[in-house]
Length: 112
Length: 228
Image (cartoon, rainbow over all chains, first blue to last red; front, top):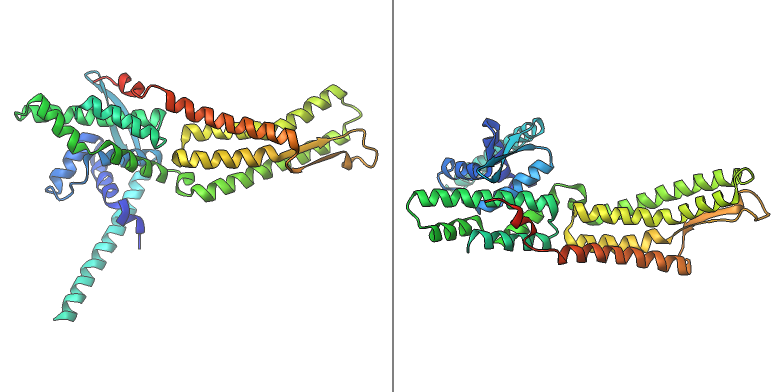
């Protein structure tokens, strides 16, 4: 069982999935997560950035800096390693999801 | 809370968690960009500047929680951060093994070329070998200070380990010893009085200096450099 999926694998999966479409900056990512999950994922907005920085340190993302007015903005981009990690996380997620669905069916049948 | 106040508090708590330099700068730049973008968005929908500032800061999170989360996440990104105790032990044993190998090779070469080398040269080589463990220890502590894989607590543990272990590596060379060539040199781990105490004190003072420089520097150094 992929233990890390339960700890911080979900935010990581969401971020990598979004960045697989195109490069994005933090505020954009937070907004997309909020709107695409219909507000289900409401973890602290600032928490996303340390995860992004960990992924950059792990070479799963690369970063490009651009000035917006005077302030710097970081655009995050998925690397080849990040693409591999995304595939692994998606497979793990599929197996967890299938396992939970099967478990719930089994448990419902047993009680009926 | 106002954005500047939020960022100043964040810089302070990040430093306390051992997140310094470029790692702190990039986080603060990201949080600053997020706050400004959120404030602009809230003001477009009719919020006052004051209300927008307050809402943007509160939705980003508490600086203390964010710093704790950032420290946890960044620790996860390095092998040393994930295994602070195991890695400290492994690196300690590995560095001692490398130093022993260096001293064994140097002792072998020195004892066989003692007739061809001038006594001054031999003294310089021997002194270099005796101070090498200390230099390795100080370089290791400097690297720890910049990468900070396990925060300040981890830094304190590494400092004590380094101060106790590396200065105890000794190398002795006595070219006038009559018995045999190989008995003219020796090395190992030992707490040889004065030399050990001096090296131990230098290592500890160096790590205290690294810590105190960081804690005495201006807390708004990064925040002041970020353009809004």
